[in-house]
Image (cartoon, rainbow, N blue to C red; front, side):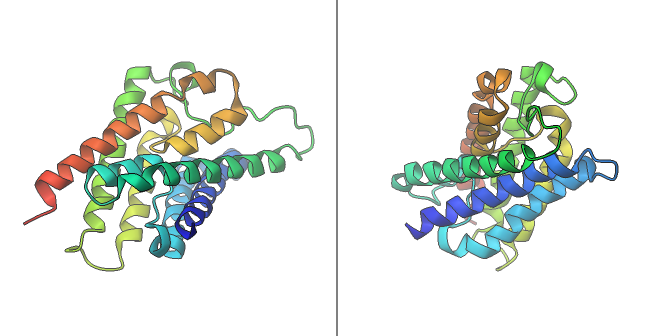
Length: 227
């Protein structure tokens, strides 16, 4: 149960910090912009990886858990509990963000709520194919960095830094394309509150990241895990 609670808290922090920066701070007069949001997402993973990574492994993402399973680094029997915990943490964070944003003077609706989308819901109107390819490739490389930096032959203690910086880079690349998912829990939580056409598009932000993670897990296991 400690592992599941660690995943709830870690995923909560990822969504609250990353999506919160996008909702509250990205578009103000002195806002942090895309670069600031990208850094915020990276910092959430870095900080929680150090805080609770020694308890649960610090996945905070269903695609990461599945990719680690594909790479032979995680037991399949734990997948359901981890995925449920990650969804719970993400949805609780989105609910907290909603409570905060709804208290703003003149509030009418949440707008995009940092949700992910393609076509008309893409920040720069990228197509479904563009979104799928981006989410697939970026999640695959994210998993390769995770698997490589946590490998027993990698330098010890630096994995959270590599993983956090990788997630920052991923957001720098893909915020204009999909608002960046690479995390089905993060996509689901925001779509539930944004509603409208965001919910029907959530399938892509499950399928593409999970497929990318599985491919990366197999690649690491076959090519990089052993000398």
